[in-house]
Image (cartoon, rainbow, N blue to C red; front, side, top):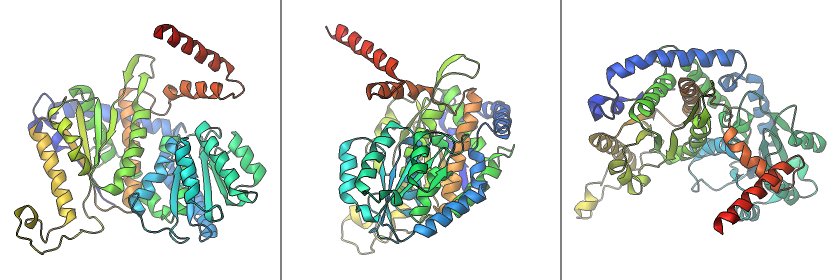
Length: 460
C-alpha cells in the first residue's frame, strides 16, 4: 500500500509569499501538529472516539464475511436505506472498487448492484422500486439512532413492498442498546450488525455501516481493512515525513488559517473516486464547521468542501479557480497505475486536432491534464496539493479513507473544536419531528409556527 502526499504547490517558493507557505511558517506549525496528534491519541485511548480501532475488529469483519457468504446468490440487488454517513461510505466503496455509476456491468446474483435510497424524494424511491424485483432484493437499513426520519420513511415503503415474507430479506445496522430500529429488528428477526457508540456516522465507513453493504456486493472487506490498518499505524507516527495524515492536516490548516483559504476543492482525477469526493464533503463539512471551540469561544470555523471531477470540471469550474477569488486550496486525488490505459487507436486521419493523440492513451491524457491544471493553478498563485494512490484496490482505498478521517480529526484538534459532534443539524431534525407529529417534539412545532407567523408579517 502506497499513498504519496505532495505539498510542493502549497509553498511560497512555487506560488509566492502572499498565498504560499514559507518554510519558517511550516516549521513553526509543526509543534501544533504534534500537539494535535497527542491530543487526539489521548481521546482515542480514553474511548471517546473509535474509528481508529475499526480496521482491527477481526471478529466483526469475520462475522460480516460469514453472513455475506451465507446469503450470496440469493439476490441480484442490494437496496440500502440510509442517509449521510449511513449511505455515502457504501457509495464510495462501490464506486471505487466496482466501477463508476452508472456504467457498471450488468447485475446478476454473482454481481449484484447497489441501489441507495438516501433521499425522501418520492421520484427516487418509486423509480428504485420499479427497477427492482422484491424476490431478488436484499434490503439493508442503516440508522445508528434507529429513528432517522428519512431512512425510516423510505424503509417503511420498501418493507411493505417486499411483501409478507419480507423480513427474511432485511438486514439492519444500528446501535446495539437503543433505538426503535433495534426494537423492530429484534421483533421481526432481522440479522443485525451493530455500530459502536463511539463511532459517528461520517466516520463509520469501516464499521458495519460500510462493511455490510460492501461485503454483500462482493468487496473484499478483509483487504479493505488491512489497508486501513496500515494507514492507522502510519497516522500515529510523530514524524511528519512519514505520516501523510498529519502532514496533510498541517499543510491544509496553515493554508486555511494563515493564507485565508476558506474553501477546499477535492479534485479527483478518477471517476472511481467520485463517490469518495461526496463522502469527503460530509466528513469535512460536518466535522469542521463549528460555532464554538472546546473552550466556548465563538469562532464559526469551517472550510467549505467542494467536489470537482477531473477532467470534467476543467470545463465547468476551473475558469473560476484560475481567475476568480483566490480563496481556495485545491487537493488533487490521482491514481498512479490505473487498471487499464484506454489505448487510443494508432490510425491517423490526416487531421492535426486528432492525429497527435493517435497511439497514446486516455490514462496518459488524464495524467497530463491533471499535471497541467496543477501547473496552471500554480502559475496563477493558486495553492494546490495532491494525493497519489499507487493503485485503486481494496487496500489503497481503505487506507485513503482512513487517512482522510485521521486528517480531519487532527485538523479539528488544531482548531480546538469538537470534530465529532453535529449540533448544527439537530434543530432542523427537531422541527421535522414536530411538523411530522412525533410525540415529544410539540414545542418545536410551536416554534416553527412562530417562525411562519414572522415570515407572513415580513412579507406583508
